[in-house]
Length: 143
Image (cartoon, rainbow, N blue to C red; front, side, top):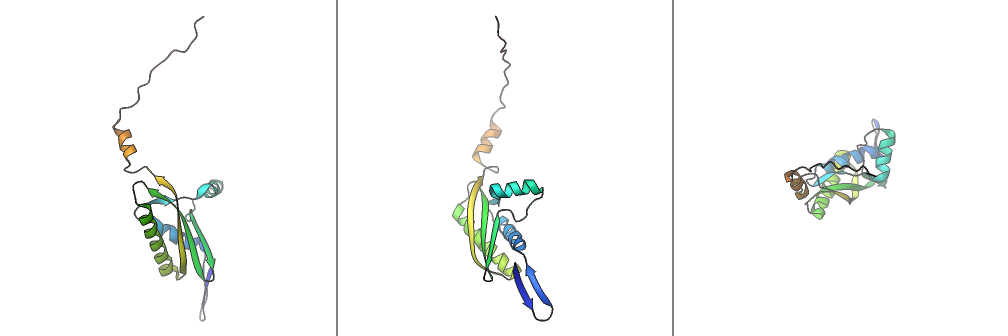
């Protein structure tokens, strides 16, 4: 948690969860990012607690007043992954420094999966094929 002191009115504290939520929003704004992935631990935690975690897929490490952010992302099929990752790094860094006033040292991007659901050639091929035909087969034995 990052603390800011104001000599007139008191302290301001920004939790790591707020920073992670800002980072997730900034990353999702980047064209080519399909979403965040929480990995096995994040998915189990969400299932056990029964609530959606808005900072899912984001790790925040605060040290010496600077933040290191790690994004675990899913990218859309067909994008240039390095370009999308660079844009995500820039967008996350700018949003956190602007909105929270915290210096961001690093933004690490871990691409964990590819989303094939939108505009993929496999989806278009599946939609044009005719539905499978069901054949009734009698499997009873005759003695």
